[in-house]
Image (cartoon, rainbow, N blue to C red; front, side, top):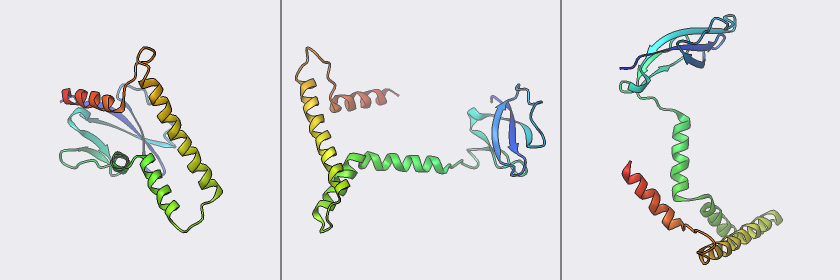
Length: 156
């Protein structure tokens, strides 16, 4: 166990944790009329963390009570969605649906669609130029890049 001493700084009116500093940090200059402080010991490597506010908070272990953060849940959900439906795929589905509907396209929609179509054509043209000129460029295809990532991940 690698116990660490930490100074925790809380906003006085709400008791919310706003900072965690190493135990050897001088906290004598903190304005105690605006902030409350606590000094605690815990082992972050073993999964311990401080949970809660100034009055009711305590050091807890992830083994006993897992820490679940909403931002992590949102991030993981976003990654899951993007892995299945990239932004480009989402846009293509929406554009296709709108084009097939009876709703008239707005000027802004038509302009966006043309811009995207032109960008896709430009991408295809650039890809062909880079791929077909091996003496001038070292071109790595998406498939080769994915294979490399998979190979690296298998060593971890």
